[in-house]
Structures are given as C-alpha cells and as structure tokens.
Amino acid sequence: MENIYFSKSSKYNSRPIIIDGFSGSGKILIAELLKAVSNTEISKWELSFDYLPILYSFGSIKKEAAISTLRTIFDEVTYTMAIGREINLRRKDLQFALRHPKKFEYLKSMLSPAYSDDHVLKEIAPKMNIPFMVHMSTFNNQLMEETFQENAKLIYTLRDPLYILETYSSYIDRIRFDPREFTPKISFKNNDLPWYSSGWEEEYCSINNTEKSIEIIYRCFDLLSRKIKKIKNKNNYKLIFFEDIIINPDKYFYEITDFLKLSFNEKYYKKIKIRNKLPRKNNDVLEGFWKRYTTNNVSRAGDKDETILKRTKDLINDSYFKKLLILRDKYFQFKEEFGET
Image (cartoon, rainbow, N blue to C red; front, side, top):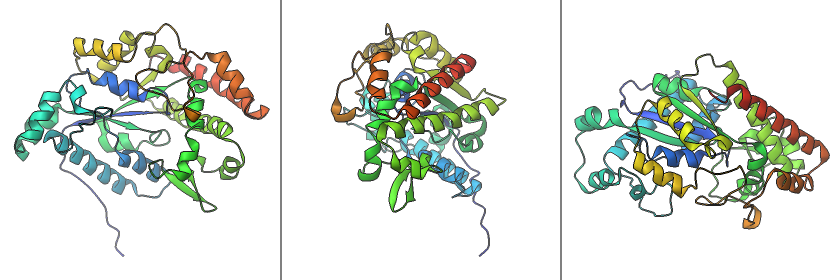
C-alpha cells in the first residue's frame, strides 16, 4: 500500500494555551485565573490533546498524521466555540459558560444564527486564545510545539511532590476499573496500566498505590526536567510553581499575562482570587473551591509537611520513602534553577 502523507494547510489564526502538569499541581487554578485574561476562552478538556502526543511519543502514530489531526481538531474547536455550538450550562462544571466574562457573547452566539465562515475566519478566530488542560502529555515530546509552532504557549504547573502524592494514590485504582477514567493505557498481562508505567510494568504491579505514586511522579518529573533543560528558546514556555502563586498571586498572574502578551479584567481577577482563597498565608493543604481527590474523601485541610510525611512513611517501604525525599530535593533544585522561567 502506498504511503499517505497527511497534512492540513488551511487553518484558523486562533491560538492554543496548553496547561500541562501533574494532577493536583494547580492546572485548574491556572484555568480559573485565565478567565480574567482578555480574549481568552473557556478552558477545554480535549482527550485528543492528551492521547495524540503520547501515541506519537511511543511511535504509535506518524508525526505528520498526529500534527494534521491535532491541527484539524483545534480548528474544529475554534469553529464550534465561535458559533456557540457546545456551550456548557452545567453550574458545577469548570467549563460553565455563565461563570466566564464572555458569558453574554457565548449566549448570543448560541441563540443567534451561525456566523458566516468568513466572519469566523477574519473577525472572531484571530482574537481567540483557547486554554487546553492536559495531563503530562507534553512531558516527553514536543508535538504541540511542532504542531502550533510560534502560536504554541505552554504553561507547566508544578508543586512539591509531597502535596500531590495522595491525589495520585487515591486515583490509581480508577485506571483499571472506571470507564469514566481516560488516561492513555497500555496492556500488560491483560491488565490496563497507565502509559507512564511503560518500562517498569512488573514493578508497577507489585507495589502499593502510594509507592506507585512516588515512582510515577519521580519518573515523569524526570521527563519534564530533562525536556526543559534541553530547550534553548524558552519563549513559548512558562513554569508556575503552586506554592509560589498561592502566596503571591499578583506577581505570577502578571507574569502569565506578560507571557501571553494579553491584558486582563481587574474586577474579574479580584473575584477569581476571592473564589480560590488567594492569597494564602502558607502552603498548608486547603480544601476550598476545588475539592481534592482523597482516599475515602478524608479531609486533609490544614495538613503540613510533617503530617503528610509521617502518614506517608507509615504506608510504604523504606526504599520508596528515601526515593520520595530524593524527589523532593530534585524538585526544589529544579525550582531554584528555573523558578523565574
């Protein structure tokens, strides 16, 4: 069969904002803050933006096919947003349209006849910046950057590994048994495992969830840190450390708007800070506007380093506890080196 080269030349001039990071590291907080940024749309969960970079990184799809498909899906998202085809009116959802500064524009587009193709192309799309939240899908590849080139803006959210550990521990069982869980999976001995267990499947299956979580974060943080250290031109990247932005949100929010080269709505920004209880006095666990995943929904409100460390140490083998301490050291060294990137 003749090889086919997939392509897509015609495209909208809208721009993606990729928010990537570990679960529990602040992606939702960034998506909330972006609502106050001018010409920024409702954030999107788009599974293809999770899957295609991972499939590409494992050689399961050719680069030109992955790029063409991502480009096509992004243009489809641009168009459906522009004409109000998929407006979300569920009050509890992150994508609830009526909690966005552009709510009246969304309602108008939903209730009015569809705009002409020419109007979308020339008047609407060039003003659209669309945030996409993904889950470590760009840690080990540069497919997004190669797809969207100078229009690509990637925001990486990071957090002290100790504080995201329990989020992963409570989530791992869902990967095998929950049909509403969408992590890209690999098959190992007829079991579904998350893609990031590739290369250590036997170990993954033999250890408990807390130990799995330490190993997952350790390996995936290594992927991201190696990627960032290799990149020479970092103009398309912004690193946001959760413990910094919750203490001093104004400083880092202004850095985000400068990075995106966009203005913002001061009044709405203040509302978002209040809703998310910003600024905070310290890094203690706060269960507020966005409830955390926890095992059996146990509250962790007010927990500090010492409390979480002690609780974790009681659950795991000493070798994994030592790895957790090493991981934290690596994280803080990385933060010291790239904290202002």
